[in-house]
Image (tube, rainbow, N blue to C red; front, top):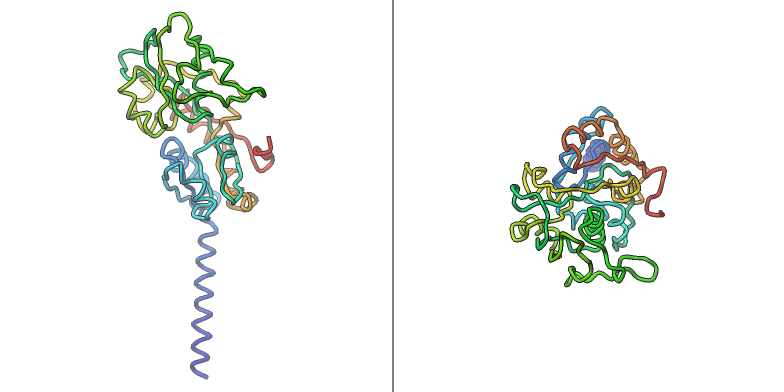
Length: 289
């Protein structure tokens, strides 16, 4: 009888302890993010907003190549590093969901030498080697009348699928004043380190902010004149498991991201290089677009 009573007491204590743990975890939101600007925005702006709502936010800086699998495997409640076109390329068996759009990072041309901010004939330019960002980089240069994009890069349906990353210069035509310029495709993780080997580089915003240091803005030659449609398409998102999209945690996180204080923080911290752009994915499924 005593043994049975002792067993019951131990079991009840275990259940109570587990319940307390679950209660605690239910108000803790864990999120994996790229270092800059994502984790900085989360820690310095969104975290205190969530605390007002009774939630604590745990932010972990994680390599972007690991973040979708980490959310799919329940290691984190959410991640914050990518845009919808990239999420659509995810091939894991667990469905992920774009909970909301938060900000857009302008793609810019950066100089390897801050004393020379003028692109001219014969200069070398490095660009990232993934197709979605290649088209964006070429569109930036085309908008500044540096080059035209050869029609052979597009398939019959108009999709940008035929670009030759091994011979990128042959895929474009440089215009007057920029004859002899060259393009080289580089892995995104190496763009900042290899910038010294080129005259200029077109580098995604968060990569430039992380790899070029606090004075990254002083290297900007020009950036995108982004349309509203482009900003919406390529805005960085908070991503969750599809099965968790209607959870209280996700709703609280989305609401915090939509707070006007996030817009104020981003504008005062990053100036023109980062644009606040909030859209609620709980009312619109961006992946169906």
